[in-house]
Image (cartoon, rainbow over all chains, first blue to last red):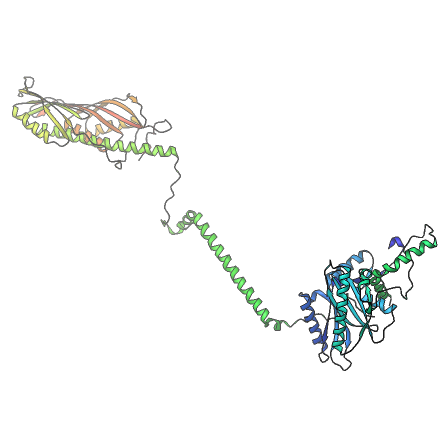
Length: 261
Length: 323
């Protein structure tokens, strides 16, 4: 950052879902907050098979029955030691760690800022990573459901696309079945490193596209040295090349958005 | 926008149950009992190790412990006496000492036999006036008696008694000769014979023998002679005959006195069990004149003094005892 004359004091860290635990569970509306917390702790413990006190846990209500019935809660947790290690490393770099987020939620921030909500259709944000794929189901801009499935690290792009097509059908069916609704998948936004390569293999009926973090946002100036006095055509060429590659910066941009918001 | 910050924990700090409540949960009870039992087991193991170590230490230092206890209780006689390690040199010395003491036991038996024979013949001479013994020679096992008699029957009677004497093996009377040397005794006779050989003493038969120096033995001889009224002249400068186990000093002695005194001298000297042996005796009786003798009887003797030869080549100290 010093070489690019960037001065930063605060940092929002976007954590890979590999390093975090994401889980959602349904909590009945009639339970007290204390009981709900005990239930969350117990469920989380079942998931990690470890001491819950070693984890930092965030909860997020995704969906709630307006009549006071059950509510769907997302639990995000990370081992405290990981967070402490990041903090200590950044402290040495004279950066204050403001926030630790999870990559797929940063992608959601990018989506929220750049894409208009769809009426009566679901937007699926698919976070494609080797070994694990997470799908965030959004109704409008609101996250309603999180779906995750594992693949092999060696799974090919076409195969991964086919698997994702199959899972999209499943998760939409599951989503509608839980809520007694009939929503359809309006679009699929692919993010992360495999987005570009898997895109051709996604079923066109889902209207897939790679997420574009600069759809509405102004693109920043390229991080290229200006001292050589480069000509204008030279400036355009990297912009074209960057359009595709910006996908892999989605999480970073989302983290920055959340820091500034 | 979804707000997630994994630096902050949305859940409260886990509740800690009161101590009293925790103590009664099944888990804590089990844990407590397990701790208790493991502690008990550990103590048992430590006790067992201490017992074993104590036992081993007691066995190693048993002599020291008993010695300490005996300071207060007196002799306990619990442990077998410690036999110090014996070197090969000491073993050889013990073997030689065994041979010496056995030899001295044998010597004592021979001396006793000789004394019995001499005393018997002397008493026969004193008790019968029908014959008179002029000389009596005993060299190891063979003896010679020169006897004068008034009649032939006297010799027969003497021979009969001699044969019946214990330890006498053979008696060979030679022909009588007429003589006029001694007044009243007209016949002279030589009687030869041998004493029974004393068998080797049993291995375990040993007499406590004090090995004195040569000069000490001679002094004791002279002292005994004075006590018994015997006039003794013993050689002091005597030759040494070196041996492996014992060195021998052989000398001559001349004793004068009444035959009874001489016998007493011999008996007492034998009973002293000194490291000295009479090898040969030559007793010459003085001629009788009436009932009382005028001249003393003379006893010439060869003697041998035994001095132990130690393994290191030196002779034994004069007064040290070897038992």
